[in-house]
Image (tube, rainbow, N blue to C red):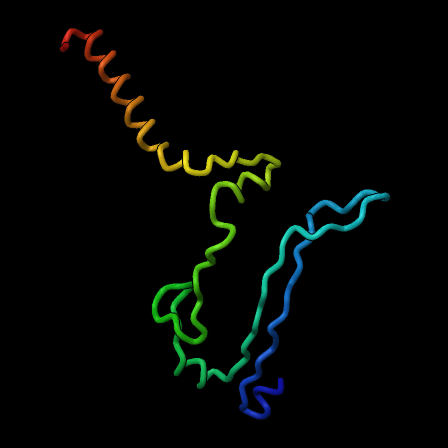
Length: 119
């Protein structure tokens, strides 16, 4: 309403929005947060919005404001932690996993070649 009356863009936020589970907690359980997101809302006139066109999501043009891809919380360990399962920390050994997989695939292929009579 203020934007249409004054023709001045308004900015609301930034603020954190907390997400709650869909099921209500039991009588003795306390409400837990399942996540949060930091939000800023810009309300502007239609004329101003037409001059500041933006892409959908992170597609181009992506500059007002620029949306960056998060770097934290995007790995399998974080995903599996939501199910109560975590991957063991292998340290330097995880660098050798592709080598072990390639060796295992090579051995399986040699056994298969031997079984069909190629070797």
